[in-house]
Image 1: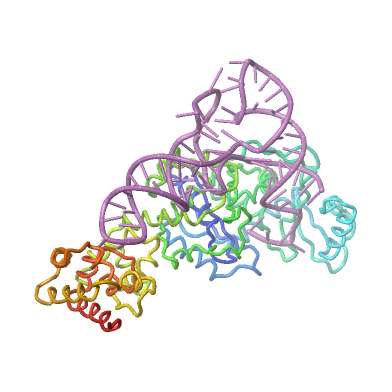
Image 2: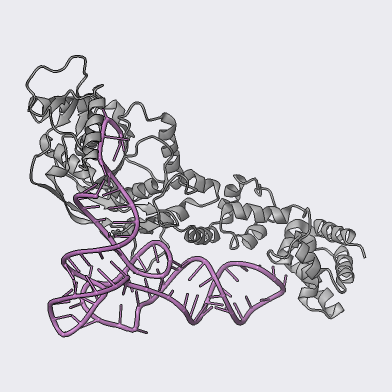
Length: 461
RNA sequence: GGCCCCAUCGUCUAGCGGUUAGGACACCGCCCUUUCACGGCGGUGACGGGGGUUCGAGUCCCCCUGGGGUCGCCA
């Protein structure tokens, strides 16, 4: 049985790197019919917030990732960790350290000045004297003094760290609360986690966690360290790099399946395939196919994927999606024509909404270049004739409107462009947009006439 | 700076000793067309550098360069 987990610390929103990590873990668990656990790493009471936890849950909900069992909160498991700390203390595998933060700082300063690597000097490791007064001690684990800590990373291969590189790191703060590297190891072991897929910023934590596993005699899981996601410039992702928050993508009009598809291809691939449904990802995903190098994200590819998914989204769903962007089509009798005309033109739902508005709402002005280009020659007579003919007929469907245009074209012996350009300007206020017959059918005969007459009115000879 | 990791078109990537180095996004051109998109077709474009190993290296080894990660009583 494969058990994976996603273990964010609730210090803010879920960012896209976190979502990719969550997705990889989720996929691997689902593919193996195993379990995917969501665990909130909130041991640092001073830093976490419930809003952040909620934000993470909301993001999961939006993209459609689920998890098995209840969400685990480390802050509710302190007594478990306490027992293990005591166990290590009793067995002499951990010890109290009475060094104050100030003393530690001073030591680090000195070491830095001497050009040495700053680290705790193990002064209390074998301390047997009388502890200094008034200092609440931390608990440190006895890390091995020599040798190498070696593990097999499922992505990077064999990783080897010398024992001298590690120090006796803190497993319990002076207030008694346990620290990250300690609780992670314990929880992963206790929850039966078999495969840990996480960002490679955790690579250096792994040997520390292995020290904990070994001190406690717990089973060590398989590790997969996924390379980071870089910004479009190929630099480290930071808060300044635009949309980091997963939910921002919803606001920008991206579909969750597009975001997931985009993210899964960042660092992972399956031959030349670009489009993956969630189901296909589950079938094909394997962490052994994850790349070893970092990857930069490029929004234009996300746009492409998003437009792909929009094209293939049923109109009914688009109607619902559009409501978040102020377009309400549920009761519009021509919504099918409208959506069919627009859905393969929009990169985002936001854009789709904008395009819909530009059709549904009367133009507030006319594009300057368009005016110059379209309003010349016989444009006035042509539009007048068009209105005349339209007024005399019933017209509901695009074909009805198209027939009238054709009549005008024939009668005046002109090309489609001669009527199309001024008509487009009248209807949309600009020179780009979907098929005019569709537009007219959507807004209807009366509105069509109204808009054409308005143009005629605005540009009197 | 120490330690660790990484390196194929601008970007995401395929490649797993013998390929005209493939695909996708973006870009450019053509076609379609009442416009703009969509779509179709075509094009520009990459193995960071230097040494080895080998009959033969994008593929294996070493060095350099470049990039990233990490060195907390954060996770």
